[in-house]
Image (tube, rainbow, N blue to C red; front, side):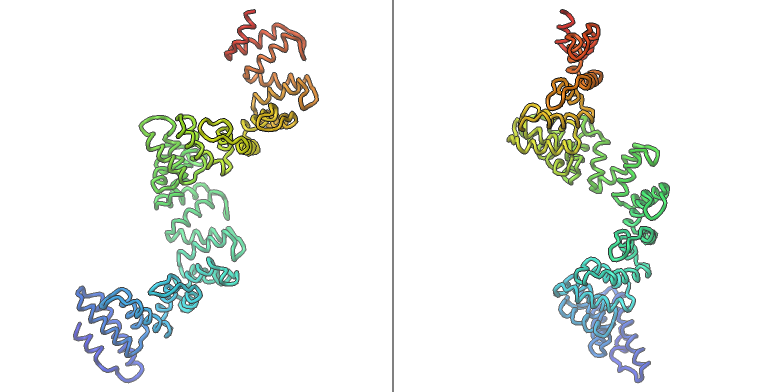
Length: 502
């Protein structure tokens, strides 16, 4: 081999165009073979010298590219990034597509001592892309689509290059086209085309695209709903390690809505997704392991819950706050409860907002703030939290924290009553009985108080007993009075016992 190399590189090039081309190609091919086929350093050094000779004396662009590569990685010579760049540039200027593509990479990623220059990268990528270098076509599309403001908000060229790369079976370009058509940026939104390209990419093993395909068949986007096809794609993506697909399968088998319920399979997939640090899966698995109970799985379940809360899962933050609020006592626990509940409250979790309000109004260790507490109570009430609605009515009714207002009390009690809050229903009945903030209405008062009494509210049961005993608003009836006292007694009322004994 060394003899052959010496002959090729030390001989004068033959005369004539065909002979010259043959000589150059032989020089390069033999050098490449010698470079990669021989394990010894001397072979690498000989190949370097041979390629350097061709690059310098014959200015062959492919040899210049190889020489640049050797300077870049230190093959047969010491690493010299500046020299490597110079040879890449010399080769690229002669139109060698591999060097043009490499120049694009250099300026895009600030390699070989060069500063990042997107416009320069685009220029070189475009030259290589015009020569059908597929990766250059994709890089062009990606950069121009991502940094569209550099190109006068014109997505059209980006989409065109992406289409060329996708047609050349570039899997990432196919996935990108799926995103483009799904989002409708640069093209008219078209779910059918999105599904087409996602399926093309998924068919080549693109895992994220497989997940997108599964979602589209699940929801009937760009196609008819097909749960079986969706399940197959989710299962494939899950088996390849896609955490979101694993979580989806876990949720499906946990709920039993779309596939037969199977807790064992659900736990398996949720565990995989949780191990992959998918926070929503960690929360679901924590619930499945029943973190609220102090059993052998508690430590693992609680750790999952805590990690999900730290990863911004709203329901996990609320549950963690509730844990500190109800399971532990003391200053540290109350402050921890407030910390997590407040995080969930800021993300419009109504029950968290209600608990934050209570802590700010009534907390033992947290610095009380009545004004802020009422604001959070109102937020929760406006989001239809029935307990908060009742509290707002009570605040207005008693003039606590807010200026007393029977009309506002009636408004909030009415909302809470419609949402099934028994005490609000009872209080509303009392206000109709007294004509407080509303026109007195005996029939409505009796209806509301009796509704709460029949639903088991002891205060309303006592009220009904006293009404029948006194004959106020209703015709006096001691048997009915006794009936309601006995109902109240069943709920533990001492007053009912005293009245029945007298």
